[in-house]
Image 1 (spheres, rainbow, N blue to C red):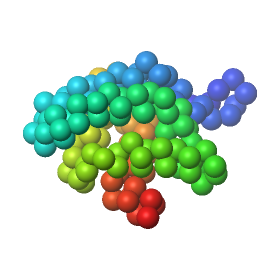
Image 2 (cartoon, one colour):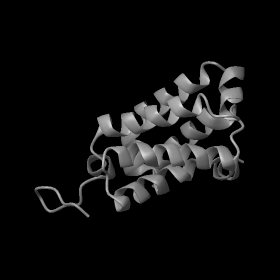
Image 3 (cartoon, rainbow, N blue to C red):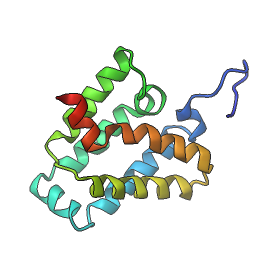
Length: 137
């Protein structure tokens, strides 16, 4: 794990390359999914969904990457916000796997290390639909 000046571990958002790299990966993911069978129909039925998801991820980038697994108030607030953001989309496990594949490819494009990519994917999978349903009920 990369360490900062004071010897403390750098947060995942910094190790990923910052907001610009995360934004690029999210943009790639959502832009690709707009034309993917299954997602295309979801986004066509709710045209503002892609924009809403993009905005949600961008607003919550540091929370998703640096606090998404926390049981503290910030982690709980984030899980509720993500639950609300995904609730109307009815995204299946297969859809979510396709999202993660595109996200991973976006990070690989920026030559992010496999260990950092795996950590970022682990953070995002906390919001997989079945987990969201279980936590939200």
